[in-house]
Length: 51
Image 1 (tube, helix red, strand yellow):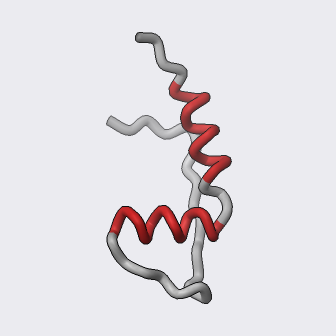
Image 2 (cartoon, rainbow, N blue to C red):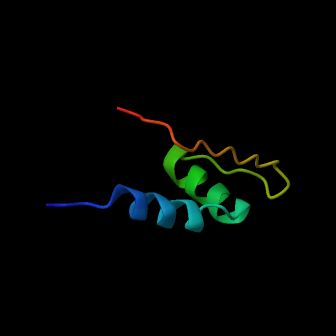
């Protein structure tokens, strides 16, 4: 299977660049409830290899 990692990364980045969507994702993954006024700081790394 040939997967385009750059395409998958750009879709994820697009979907979760919205702080409200990111808050919802974090809450679902961690099983917590963040208040609507919680500060969301989005940090994006580019050109980084992760293994």
